[in-house]
Length: 173
Image 1: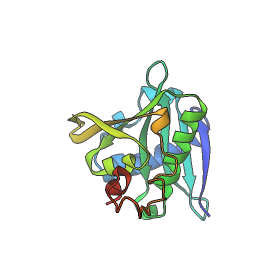
Image 2 (image 1 turned 45 degrees about the vertical axis):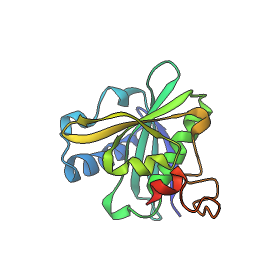
Image 3 (image 1 turned 135 degrees about the horizontal axis):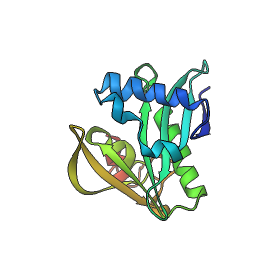
Image 4 (image 1 turned 120 degrees about the vertical axis):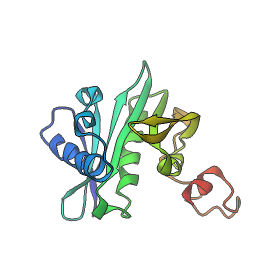
């Protein structure tokens, strides 16, 4: 059974968080190693997901981005662990914690291919596509009341009534 843990900056287990990020963002996606750890890592709450064998396999972070707005970032899953809903658990954990901390809204800087993934949680694209270290991104935001911890439409992704036409169902495709 997969399970998740919350970590705070400075926790010795954060080494697993940084290792996962290095493997996904630096080795797999080609981001520069020197920019992978940034100023937000000093004051973040991390979600660390462990697989059935207790191997750290997925992570993401939550940090304050303004007075009452939070940002989620660096969500990633090791290649060999994808398709097991670990990214889903990371998002649910971080969004739950943001709500628990009374956020007004949550933002994410999404790589274009995963905009649909974030949309399932109530985040909507805003503004234009922009370049972040050579990769096209889109800013997304959800007000507190728009956050969807189910990660799908209100029918759990089985919208008989909307025939797959709601935004959440469209984002799954």
